[in-house]
Image (cartoon, rainbow, N blue to C red; front, side):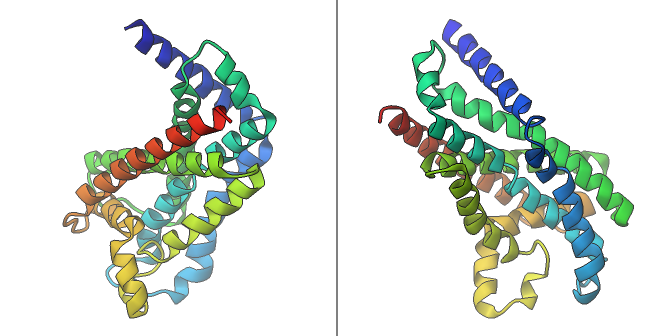
Length: 257
C-alpha cells in the first residue's frame, strides 16, 4: 500500500513539474492554444467551400476530425520533454533519487491530459463560433470528450516512445510529425473516404484515426455509429498498452546506459 501511495505521489509531483514548464516556454503554450484555432479557421474558411460532404455542413464534418488530429498531436510536449531530459542527463538524476521509476513516464503522460483538455475546450469554443452545432444529447457529448481524452492519452505514450528513442528534442518533433501527420490526412478527418483513390481508401478504412473520427461524429452529431465507438475505445486502449510497454522498456535501457 505504501508503495502504491508513493508511486502516486511521485507521479503527481512530476505531473506538476511538466505543467510548470509550459508557462516558461511560450512556444509550447501557443501550440495547443493558437495552433488549433488557426487549423479550424483555415479549413472552414479556406478549404471548406471546395470540399463536398454529403449530409453535413463542412464545419460539422470538420470539427470531429480536427479535434481528433489535435488530440493525436497533443503528446508532442511529452516527446520534447523526455528527449530534453535525456540530453541534459536529468533522467540519470531521477534514477538516483528515491522515487518510482514509472513516475517519470506516467507524470509526463498524465500532464498531457490537462493540456489536451485545454485544447479541446478552445477548439469546441472556436467551432461553435464558426457555426458548428452539437446534434446529440449532453450525455453523448460528454462521452465524446471522454473518448478524446483517452485517445490523446494513448498517443501521449506514442510520443513518449518517440522522445525516448530520439537523439534530440528537434528530432523527436520531426519524427512525430512525419509518422502521425499522414495518418490524420489519409483518414475521414477532413474529407469523405469515398472521395479518395481506391488504394488510399483501403488504408483509410483500417486507419485508427478514421475509426476514432467516425466515433466522435456519432457522439457529437448523433450520426450512425456502427462499431466505431467500441472500435475507437479498443484502438485507444491497445495503442496505450503497446506503447506504454515499449516506452517503459526503452526508458529502462536509457537509464542503464
